[in-house]
Amino acid sequence: MDAKDTPLVELRNIHVAFGGVHAVEDVSLKLARGEVLGLVGHNGAGKTTLIKVLSGAVRRDSGDILVNGASAHINNPRDAKHYGIETIYQTLALADNIDASANLFLGRELRSRWGTLDDAAMEAATRQVMGRLNPHFRRFKEPVKALSGGQRQSVAIARAVHFNARILIMDEPTAALGPAETKQVADLVKQLKREGIGIFLISHDIHDVFDLAGRVAVMKNGRLIGTAMTSDVTKDEVLGMIISGALPAGARRPEARVQ
Image 1 (spheres, one colour):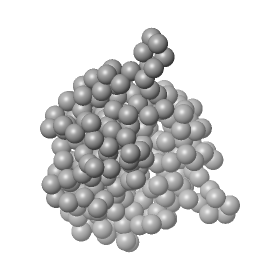
Image 2 (cartoon, helix red, strand yellow):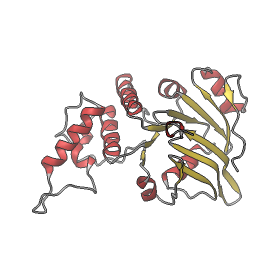
Image 3 (cartoon, helix red, strand yellow):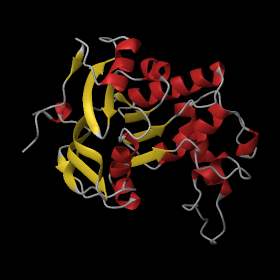
Image 4 (cartoon, one colour):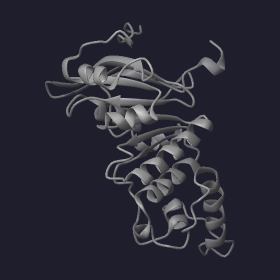
């Protein structure tokens, strides 16, 4: 397999149980460079647990994770960051009382040769990465609590990208956003795709998934029902997969177990 055809990340036969409950059962998924994969299912379907395995927040009982074709040992969030995996939570995990650059470098501040905070260097780096992602962003000096939802998403994504994320997990990225802010997030996602960053998109909004993702994976009761290109299925067909597990003509069954 050529390097360009190697999946950015591959989950193989992932299994997670809590007591006697199989939260994730034998799930395999691949994510390509520059791909947005929507992960959908009802509450309790297992999608959040599966993604927490990738982010290091939950340990798998069995199964393998490969990044760029090589085995990845992910047992905690620090391990995930080592492999360029970052999570953008629905809450965004931003400090509301400080500005964009202070949030970007929170916990990883740059310091001058005298040991003081190098605010100028941090702001310059923030302006550079934001120029790539959201050239219209101008509110660098304001605390992030004063920013719109779309602008706050920009800050959270910029923080991940600046520290070399290649795989992003986005949890309900447009929840509670208006149409203009939702479009802003969509533009951010398109830019990330152009840079070859792969995105797992978790969303309860089927319209969100069809607008942002090129492919959708449906989970139900801990199992992967199937995957489909969003261009090959309708929203109603995906809803049917979520509710009944029925596979439409444009969907693919889960791959055979990887040995």
